[in-house]
Amino acid sequence: MPTRVALLTLPLVVDGVTHLISDFAGVGQGFRYSNEWLATLTGNALAPGFYAGTELGSFNSWMRLVTGVLFGLAVAWVVYPALHAFFSEVRATLDSQLRRV
Image 1 (cartoon, helix red, strand yellow):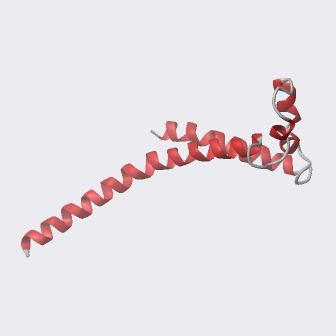
Image 2 (tube, rainbow, N blue to C red):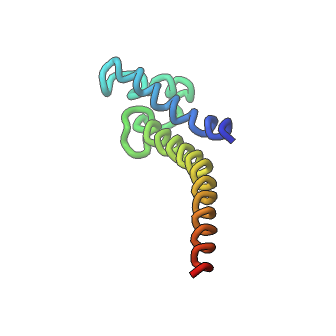
Image 3 (cartoon, helix red, strand yellow):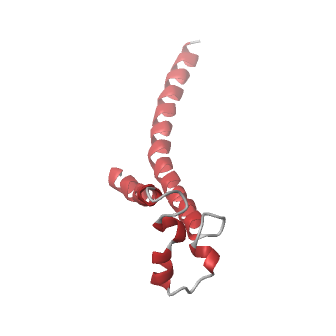
């Protein structure tokens, strides 16, 4: 299970690290702000507003959404079973105490 969580977390890490590296050029000036690499890769097939900036609908906003959802699923995948096991033990303890009363 930890391998699956790591795989779902990896896109978030890559997105964040590439933005960090890009911001060394100055916020709003790095390769992740203009995304010229993506425009070249797709042959400018999409609207110019998709490639540049961080506004809703841009590549950067979509990547943040997708990587955030994947990370949320990974956390839920790990945390929910742990919480379920913990509260099952609490319920069993409370049930046994209530039977004594």
